Length: 186
Length: 124
Image (tube, rainbow over all chains, first blue to last red):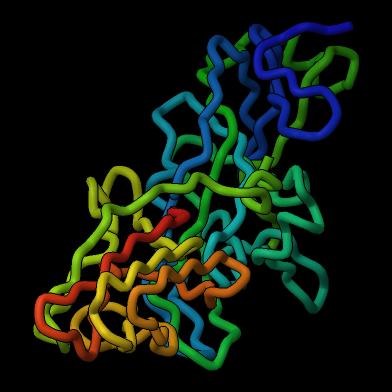
């Protein structure tokens, strides 16, 4: 049985990478090969309050600046709203997440019963490439706040420069976890 | 796991508040919204989970629970002279307070008072 920090077994949230493991971090058209040198958990916190929303209104697309990471760091996050809002996510601001051809899925309060461990909300943030969110108020009365709770893991990493190792990653002959810190397309 | 939000949350009691002036002029703070370091911890709201009202010889009266001055958030509660009223979360609408919760009694007999306290669950 593997043992490592933050282990939670069935359910819950586990880190995407452990100490000294390699990741291929994709952001837009770029790929960054990184080695994890430090990781820690980020307990649940209120990442953003988009603010008051009129009945039936949609907020402007709002950057979640609290999720910015320092240089050479990335984060793995899961999230859920604690107000009755329907939220769509973009990373970066113009690229949607959870997208289908004619539909962009969303996260609302039902996520905590439909996906209690929030697996399907997971996203990644690379350095200061923060996500943005739009919150919609589906009700016939105004909301006074539109709050989102985020939790996850933080990773400090170094760039992998070894050419032979990089070629092995690209050939699929060396272990490397691929993660996407953005959406794709528009 | 987020499922813990579905379970009983952290419950916080308020102080026992005495209302001894009738009408909106006697409004008292029932529970103060947390405004600690909003930029650091975020906006905290709360829902009332329990209410206990002791009518200390105040005469029959309506007790109003709301925000600010005379902005009711529940229908007024009829309190009978000398009785103790207790309401649990199954009986109280789960209105979410984003401001201090206040209470006042519409009429009081001379030297009468309403004692009231609540228990809340904070959200934020």
